[in-house]
Length: 201
Image 1 (cartoon, helix red, strand yellow):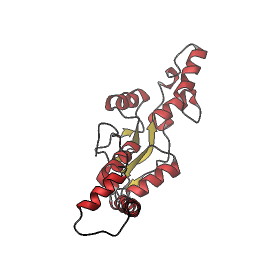
Image 2 (tube, one colour; image 1 turned 60 degrees about the vertical axis):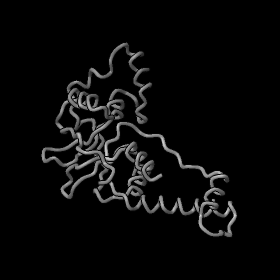
Image 3 (tube, helix red, strand yellow; image 1 turned 180 degrees about the horizontal axis):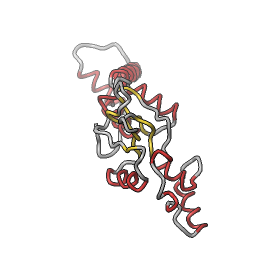
Image 4 (cartoon, one colour; image 1 turned 90 degrees about the horizontal axis):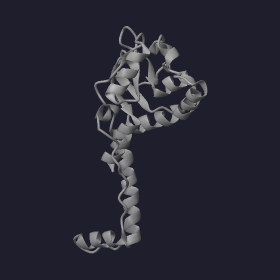
């Protein structure tokens, strides 16, 4: 799954008029109030969504192929790839093609003085203070020197519920999906997860 952008989605709210029309459209007499009907629907909807969250796997929603960067690549090459592909981060692989870490905009920003938060405006403030580009000293660094490691990864069989839990627990924005040898086969981003919620809704 490789959507161009995050789609807006929201659960459909049932109005009393919707409930009454549905009840009238059903064959026979239903001895239930609109409020009861709405509650049954709410619970059934939540259970169905939970079932789907545990049925869909990373392999169903991940973006592939993966734009991976070698850990020996220089930062100009890495930044160019991220910019050209319109992505904010990518897995970093070693010589054997196994994931060694992840490099993202935050890693670049931290290297430029953004601190733990990776705030872009902190970099702007530093640039203005020093009257120069804070990226210049990074020219001779490699991806392996600034990447976040070890990478948090998961197999293609992880469920959407599992992915959501990993995002929250690890406070990450992307989850590389790997094969049994630790080589990337796809990636799930927060955007992919949001779009999958839309599919479920």
